[in-house]
Length: 287
Length: 282
Image (cartoon, rainbow over all chains, first blue to last red; front, side, top):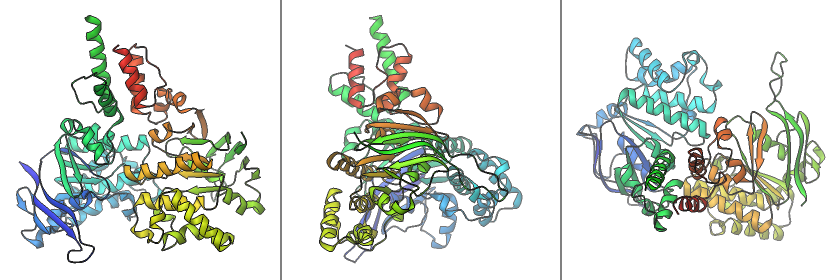
């Protein structure tokens, strides 16, 4: 069953003015429960506008957004509940931290949901553990922490609301490679524990290749594709053409194919490339 | 070739705390010599001291030990501070923090106005700098309507207009999308190639570093590797140990080498990688 669905979703900014611009144009898609989805598209492709519809920050100009099969705008007064069920973590969320202690900052969302203290505590500690923040940090001021730690506090704050769908807009932007790998690993840990649906916006196909079951690509306000990771990488050439980066390793295997060395598989991670090449080389030696 | 930047046993630590305890050195004796016209990438994880090093080149920070000489000027020489900052310009990570005017061309002219450059000369330099970064047609736009990559190029134009010998860029593409990154890198490479401006590029992106003349890797306040990109990236284990990546093609070559195949450890481009794999199957 689809947890999140859009039907002919269209959104036009500044309608009726000279600046009128359709940012999302008749997008229909179904996201299955429990998926890890990578979201791609260059600046201005409409991906940010699209994800802001998923938790009702924007209301469609036309078309529908369904959560668990129900139109989220059927009753305007219930849109607040939708925001508890679909958590959105913005870019550079560390700038949104404001509480005195790490614990209070993570607890802010659950508190607003009206949960009791014991439940809040459970959620704060569990998410802190998932995201790799030790209990010793809970009473520290979040402003004393490193940039990467602050970002994890901000992400934990949304996770602690235990949304059915968690959307993260470029959670690794500006981090160094070690910080980037850490954040992605922690998000994976959270996913494994909760089995919730997660959407991650990223410019790095190399990162997306490491976690995504499916990839959603936006281009010029339209849905370019929403498909299994392997099928999306099979279209590497088209994806390059619309201005997105494909992993370096995928480009190498594309070049080998042009030279007549076809391994018959889509390659997008180094580990897979190594196994594939080693296997092929062994087979040749046997022959 | 002439040396443009030279650090001699450069040490730096922040101010002592209230109890008088001196914090640990952020830079622990850096000896670096960069020649005029070189394109140098500086790599290292967050907190390794690379931004601190960059801030020493145009005297935003001053050494607590050792010295930094830029184009013959000691950065400690306060009388020459203005001259130094004209010769070594700096571009920062966040494009929104570097734009001061409400019109693009005024922003580029900002430093020239402060320096009292005559009008005709200023007009000529502003136009030239905007053309150099491919932003001339936006000269009358408001910066607020520009993309991150465009703003970053305006910031670079503002530096070029001062006709510096050297530009230091501290993760200029970290907040940009792939398109913006490409535009900014193309502009930087063009400055280096056509005007011979020395470039010091601080980055987390290994593909950006792979395109440079030289890569300096820092860890815990020290320079741990300093060589051409192919040699630096061939040290896969060392780089991984300090939390850095290598380009995917270099990693693949390293994996195949580990498995006993004869493949060069110094592969850094897709072309070289495809060639090497083709040879294995020949």
